[in-house]
Amino acid sequence: MQRLSSAGTIWYKRAFPLLWFGLLAVFLAIAWLQPGGPGKAPPRVMMIVPLFMMGFGYVLMRKLVFDLVDEVWLDGDQVVVVQRGERNRIPLLQVMNVNATTMVNPPRVTLMLRQPNTRLGDSVSFIPAGPRDLFRSFRPNPVALDLIRRIDDLRQRSP
Image (cartoon, rainbow, N blue to C red; front, side, top):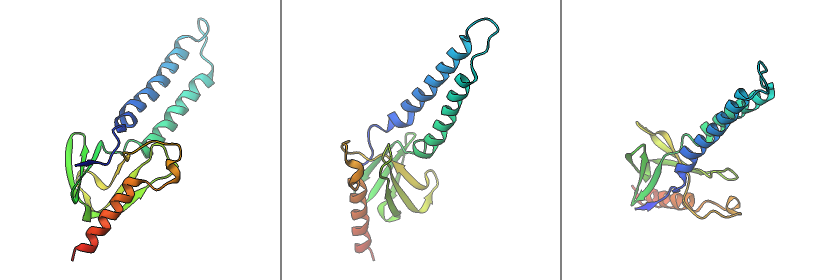
């Protein structure tokens, strides 16, 4: 089996959100507990900005990070998707479209499915494995290109 998803997915899905919201919560706690004297409330900006950053971060992470699957593997003519320890096999012929984002961090590959999977829904998104270099955003994603070629070959061979 060939791994298609990045091993760094755990950082984006678990560690970074924990770090983001944890540091903002610590900042809020310090601002609230050290207001500058007895009976004095912290400046409003010290409360509003972290709350705004939490809200904005949640919306951004919900759109870009929280829907990522844990692992994606290529096993012959099937994609093996691991989400919360559960493995799902999806035949490549069931993939309707392969979409790769550019100029987005983390990079994403989304597989649109012909029929929704009961556990995964109608699409599977993951961070593709591969080298991280400065100009990767200006080139087509090699994982997405390989999947497109494999799916096209299967469609041409199938009756």
